Image 1 (cartoon, rainbow, N blue to C red):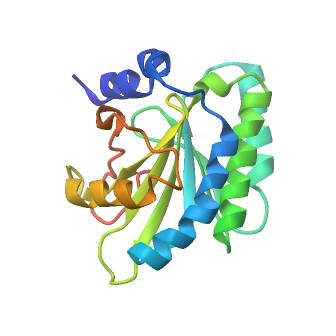
Image 2 (cartoon, helix red, strand yellow):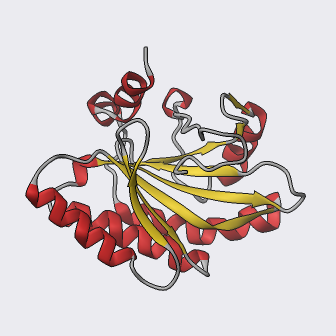
Length: 198
């Protein structure tokens, strides 16, 4: 199974059909309070950049929706809308505060939903940096499952399962964490110490 087949399986219609709750962009705001626990209890600082990944389509109306997303993210700080090597589109933003970053990605996701393209949304990806200088971890929100899951990559093809389980156990009361780890899909960076959207 290729990477595109895997993405379709985990973020596709089967994932949506199996979901125990509907996705809601409002869920992203759970991360604002959860970031405090990530810092105090787990020693991870929230990063200043996050990404929204979705499946684009070739239509004039969708291009207009993308321009709306770009306008939303064209605030203070850096932003970009770009296609990755797998044909998926990323809306990425850097903000000075994590609260502002969460809010702006929420508005970007809600903009696509309001324009009728909520079914094109795949995931929102937020990274957290360890205070001891180790490897970053991510909280990923699956729009097809309506839930979060942890992702702790090690390099470009391995993941730290023990760290992911620890993140789940500590954060389960604060985030709607995906119970079925089969849906914890890894969004690998294309090089070590890079982010999935790079």
